[in-house]
Length: 363
Image (tube, rainbow, N blue to C red; front, side, top):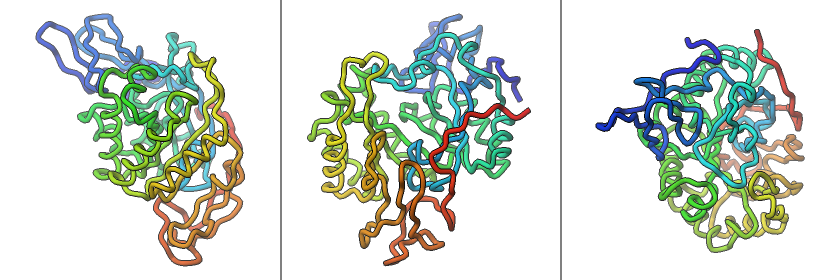
């Protein structure tokens, strides 16, 4: 196993006729000469290899409620150990974690923690899962894969919070040991991806392809999130089209979260998302046939509870991230009418609540 903080040779690259090496991890396919870094900054060419410079370096470890990812249909109420690294393969002007995702001082932004240490830390604190989050796990793919393997060995689930901007050839290895994913579907317009996320042409299509692959070709439990930004991706037509695509391509049971934007990074001149926008988007999604639609980053208990798609009964009542009511039988079905609730559920919910607890790596 690699040493914490030491660069690791990337597993996905190819040599080009002109002597450059092409990174094949994401659709950017950065082509690098010796000493050059990719768009993500954390993948660097060194001699005849491309290296990941953040293997074993994490930007803190924190125990969160699983609902914060957000995942509402995956082990509700349980604690998840969350971590990220520096770097990102998108350049979102509205990034809420830009201090780490755009960091150019990897050492200063990080602490050392190997995959074994991360898994051991999660197990020590009785977490049910480990989440790769904060920045996009795609850019630290080898580190995420190695950590997922260590987690599986200890009986821990793994969660990936990602924008889904990944090359098709890299997906199988990246998600092989992942149990659940929340994919950030940033908008339903390719112009938004190009102009606000700096994805290059085709960004939306790449993300939609990843989402469809995850839902139909893997056992990974998938939920989607869209951060609604006033004046940029909150128009009714785009929301309708997004929800129609989800219903037709993925199915109506895939949960969708609309979350509120707050001014940050390069979008400090845009106002925060008003709650009425989130409620309108949720109504549009329900009208288009989606069964499980939530709002986040605002106080709205009615839109944060899980209902039965058969009889409409409240199955999981939430106050913030805390579970306040549970009406599922031991098989994950509605206690009133027997309709199965899609997702991964224990016989009883967890009781972690709303806590956020930073922790140190276990020695």
